[in-house]
Length: 289
Image 1 (tube, rainbow, N blue to C red):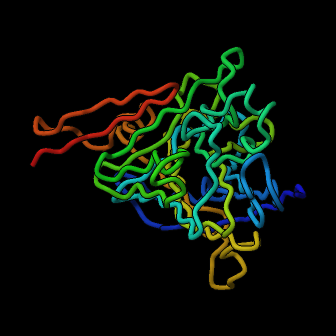
Image 2 (tube, rainbow, N blue to C red):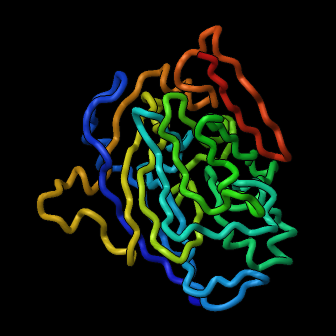
């Protein structure tokens, strides 16, 4: 296994107004998603055969150390999709779908745990409260469940992740935590996947700028093949598209995702179901029509 770090720049998924937003070119040039290759594997790691697997880390790159990634989300208007043709590795030693389920003790005992596939905001293992870190919070639509795809053992382990319904879903960390702060390296970890094939799809993230201005959505598509520049090699792609696509959003939209509530108001016909397990919490909405 050899370690390496190469950044795959992605290009914009869509350009145009959503909800109450408009394109802000200055913001778009300063924020983008990137994908790093952190390990390439050959042979067994613990009980797992990771031959020909690659571990990818997904980041949001920002303009200021105090910029904050509030959440990664998806719905029918701003879909998030992570497609892995050959699936991805989930360690049996992880206790949940996010980085919160990776224990520090486990990392010291089981090397394969370092290569678990997980979602996160800013942390790569269980939170350290002394550093202001907290567990990752997760919402999913019970009509489009994806959380169990990040568990092992699970019947859906390694399946593609979709957040494309009307109610959608997200993963986030509270604004009061240190998780989402970019820090001196100007980047926030949002996911890790270990797979024998490249991953592709779209991601949407909600970002709070350091200057206190309205939060905005960064929406980008990715297609990590051999970890080269994606999209930007095409002469027809504008510099704005290569830099990223950012849109301002209303305070209502920020409240919906930034505090882990669903995007649309619930009518009296809709009931909420809270499922709590370990450090993970997820909310499903059953719609009675």
